[in-house]
Image (cartoon, rainbow, N blue to C red):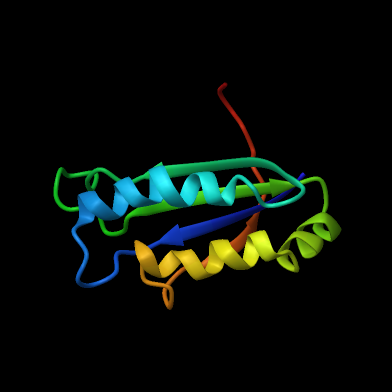
Length: 107
């Protein structure tokens, strides 16, 4: 599996609860249509570990069979629509992204 993780930050001028709702109800189904996608999950940040405000909206993970499948997906109109939709709930200029590998110790 080839997995990408995105950290999603709030966009000024939008209510946090509304942003999370949009991300879950609108953006999630849109992202699910990306060709070749094998796994997609959102992790919404509810608060900081000490109970204060969360430092970001959350993170998302997308997985594909291979890096080649990911590259093909990024050329699709569906992926383009996902990128263009980010501005509706998050800061499109602040979405750190990385290729990641899971190491599971307890499942």
